[in-house]
Length: 250
Image (cartoon, rainbow, N blue to C red):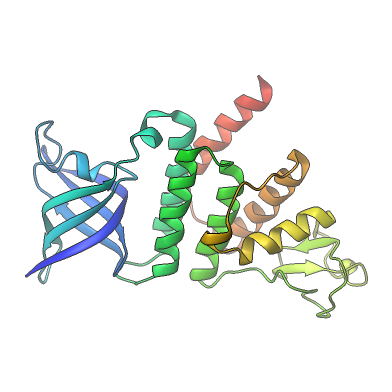
């Protein structure tokens, strides 16, 4: 049966000398694997439409096994993301994070919209660190791991939080901060921005400016949370970390 899929290429792997398995994140079906026969050949009509981060419409033969890609039309090539090392590194991290947390054929339209949104904004030059925190929060929520970012996780109070407890999964107010000796320090700005990013919609996302100290707090908090509850190897994140360390040192 022929089926048309709209999606984004989040991963590919070689299959034999000339074929590729392409992992799409689709609008209708979530993560979806297709076989692209001959796509590794330079003159293949499937070569361009199966490049990482490309959005397209894909016509596939579906049946009992893996779908086979028949043809595709590019909607967004995102060549800039592949040609720029910095942008490519962030995009690779987001797509690997999504790939690791989502099961195949699990529809998720909100996450699909966010994937399109952050890739487009990355191409436009929006702060990739803020985009990373937003996308992490959205994918975590979709996978059932969202931290509690409204009120104190212990008492439910609405006082300004002073720490983030990874173990308890949320904010701690000043009266409850002693409940977790390993809780991470949280500035009022970081607490406010973290809550804002968790609830923001694509339509409201604009140029968000955050001080470097706050950015590092946000990264540390979400990194610690992800490592505690997900515990998955992310090679693209390791590469991104090394690259950011080089920037800071030089």
